[in-house]
Image (tube, rainbow, N blue to C red; front, side, top):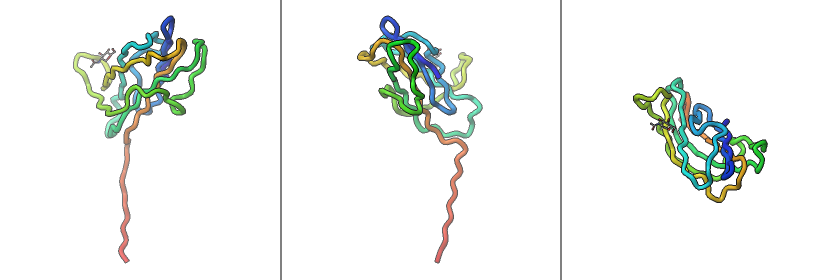
Length: 137
Ligand SMILES: *[C@@H]1O[C@H](CO)[C@@H](O)[C@H](O)[C@H]1NC(C)=O
């Protein structure tokens, strides 16, 4: 879970609802400006072998004017969708990080000042098996 603070101009909270994926950036509690572009780094643990990536959704949700405001879990609501599409994490040489992909998204310029949440929903197939039975009469 990550929370971003929309300070003076807004603070941001980054929260991940993403089994098998973590938000590497921005850091929880980061301050972001409305209307600015931020890099969202989505990491995939190296241990997740044999999974098939499907998609990732990055949402932005205003949680309240106070920095103590509670944000609902991103599994309930993602808010404004900033990105929705392919997720293809890769190893990057010279970077001591798990496979990841960076997404540049824009903080809504209409966001209210206060606390906001960056939620990520990750869709993948892990250890799926397919079976079928057929019978003939
Ligand atoms: C992704 O973004 C993070 C945070 O800005 C940075 O540390 C990392 O090097 C970037 N990765 C690539 C491959 O550019």
